[in-house]
Image (cartoon, rainbow, N blue to C red; front, side, top):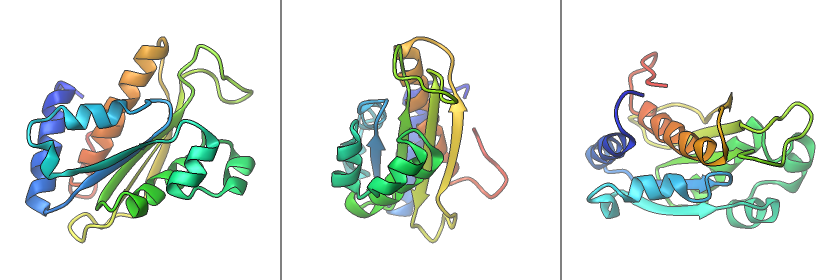
Length: 172
């Protein structure tokens, strides 16, 4: 991403407005940082629906309907749970697009196979103009806690923009 996140948020807003769409977020490790980025864009009240901060496993289950067994089977930091968060946020958030982020920002919280900096993302969209199934990915982000959180929010924003790109053109 070469553009500052503020410009990316504004571009997303323009695309959502053109599509007549609204966006929601479901965040764990970013603690609302993605929603903050989006709502910092002028005019965001026209296209930002709501954000869920689902820091705990209970919040993931209660707020956006993530199955407890899915969390138990794969762990809260997994592409499976991120996808369930995005799909749940699409439904509960009454939006057309949703981004979800769950990860380990540190300094603690690491587990075998999931070091600090492990972050899982998912994007779901129900727009006919963006006909893609829920997409999820796992990444490793280097840096301290605040760097991991900021880079994760920016990456989730870029993924929302990618929903509006032609197939095969991905800014990530």
